[in-house]
Structure formats: structure tokens, C-alpha cells
Image (cartoon, rainbow, N blue to C red; front, side):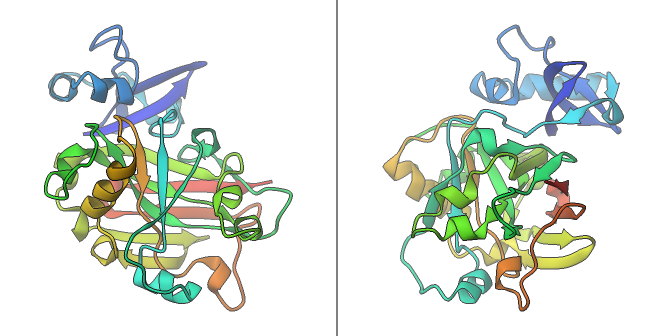
Length: 281
């Protein structure tokens, strides 16, 4: 299934993509199931699948405004330097453990929505990434069972304000300007994706390929990330892990290439979808 969060006529809804439309789920599963996160918490995925098989779409995709797949995750963990080519272009050494930083939920935006270049910087960079959404919480999760905790996959663009990112050794300021973290277009459930390591990932700026890799290239694969993160903090349903970006970021090109108003950026991850945004200021 492809699960979507959207706005329509001033209200936030969630549903399933089917035949170019949306099956609305807000009133079909229960009064307390009003979002993808609550669907996962109540473990009502089977009921959603039954609805998908039986019901035709209620509305067209053209009638909605895309919102971040999970607008209100309790935690967003971003992974840095998780592809060899990106680590190489940054000049960073090999490490024994993943580089983790956080992004705030209110910095996110949806598919086909403006990606806001901060007026404080001209060094606004793209980072196409695969995001996973936790469907079953836990602490100290083993690598062998880690993928059982993944509800599904989505595209993410970890928009980076490079000068602010490098004010100190901490990444947080450059990763948390408003409307710099596109997340979408939808959550593709794990059963539909299958083996994530077979997925390609590509970032395009104005149609030109900037980043290209395979998910099998991850230095720290998803089970290792889940094991590591769940050791220092409990993972809860709806938490998001953004798994890292390939080489080819704009900041490390010669000359550098940064996003500017009027640009279009796309993150394409095969069957997970294409996330597209327009740069504004």
C-alpha cells in the first residue's frame, strides 16, 4: 500500500493511493484512527488493506495538498556520511559507528510544496535520502529483527544550509530551518518494497542528475542503524530515520552548485516514489 497524509478543504486527512486517487481513511477504521501514525499504533494495517481491496477512491490526487508523510513524529534521526562516495568527498575518516543528528518535525514539508531557501545563506544544498518509518517500537532491537520494526519507506530531502551547518562541529543549526525537509510523497509499506537494498536512489536538480547510488551502498545498513539508535533511546511508532545521502552534494562540487529560487529538485527512489519540490525564498 501507499499511505498518504494530505490537506483538503482546510482539513488534514490520511488515506491510501489507488488508481490515481485517494481512499480516505479518517472515518473508515475508527474514531481514534485519524493519521498514519495512529493506524500503525493501533496495528490496523490489515483493515486498511481490506478497505483498499474493496473501495474505490473518494477523491482525485489533484484535489489534495501533500503534507509530510508523518507530520508529527516524536523523533527524526538523520544519518550523516553513510555512503562511501559522500564520506570521501567530505574528507571524513572511517568510523566504527554511524553519525547521528536530529531534525525537528516542524521543519518538514510535503511533496510538490515549496522548499524555502533561507534569506540568511546562499549555500542551500540538496541531500536525497531514503527514510524509514518505525511501525513497531522497541529498545535494544537486534539487527536480526530490526526490519520487523519498519512500517515502510519514503523519500526525503535533508535540505542543508551549509554555512550554518559548519558554524561548529554540531550539524543541528544548518539542518533545521523551516520548510527545508521535504518528506513524501507517501509511505510505501514494507511488503510492497521488498528488499530495500535493491532500490536505486537519484537526486535531480532541474532535470540534471546530481546524486546516484544504490541502497546496497549504505555503509551502515538499516538493521545496524535501528540497532544502534534503539540502544540509546527507545524507538516509538511513527519515528523517522533518514538513512544518509550519496556522493554528489552541491557543496562538494567544483564549482559548488546550490539550490536557488525557481529551481526544481527531485528525489527518485524507484518503487518508493519521486519526491518533487520547488525552491522559493
